[in-house]
Image 1: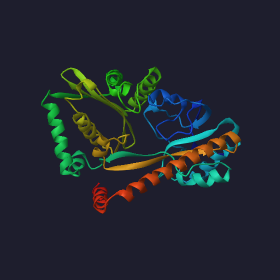
Image 2: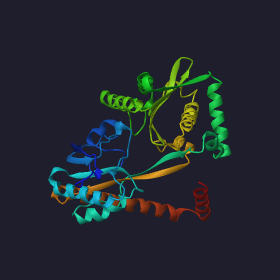
Image 3: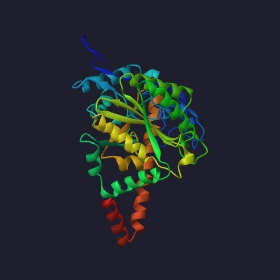
Image 4: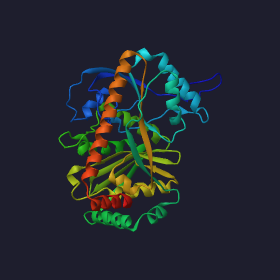
Length: 362
């Protein structure tokens, strides 16, 4: 999006074509190729769908993106992007803006301009909460502001690892980044993320293309001292690794791997401890843990929310897909409400009071 003098916004989008099981419950699914990462999705795929999306998939291990917009031009950018989609409606069936930050100024503009251009959307899409830590005041302040329970468990986890080694930690950066990547990819092959035999909803193996993608990112950022790979060794054997990128005052923990053969004896606390400490040494203000795991939540001091935005056009097939998805979503919500009301009817007053107390405490 541009005027006569400058660029106002950039919308990085790709068109994916494939057969899908549709409508389905919202999951990490982004494009048709993502079925390879979802071993439990064995249902028949019977609808051909052209998805217009951000350049994301499960293999990228990133579930969020946004338009790049100059400040104070959010409304104009949103209007022009959706106007373009409406004009070219015969080229796509569903537009999905994955993981859009709900606190973004442009997020609130979507409903108005979707309706204005005779497009359709859903009341809500898949939401996710991702955790981060504010570290601007230094490493010791970060630890001192954590709970006593956290500090005790943190020190205990680090000591348990050191007592079995000790373990060593090494940081790869600049000209050593490729050496660090080779160790990271070796750990990936020994991690559950690359194994489809483990009973998980999603597997995350790196293929030739994704390895080349991460290698290019690491090389590019390393030239500006913005890429780091942290590897924890036991004796001479790498057992865990973390790949981070730095932009401005923020560090993103992009990839993490742990050798499953050592999981029963070691943990990742020493590696994350060094990672956080190193970020404070660089005078960074925020660490984005790029996840919503229990570990990320424990290390975090705040969180941000992201939502998937669906857009359908006025062509008959896209409208048909919209009605299918809207009906399935409405039915699913009513069923959840019905089940929760049934549970409430059969719960004793003591049980209800106990459950509410637990919710308050958490």
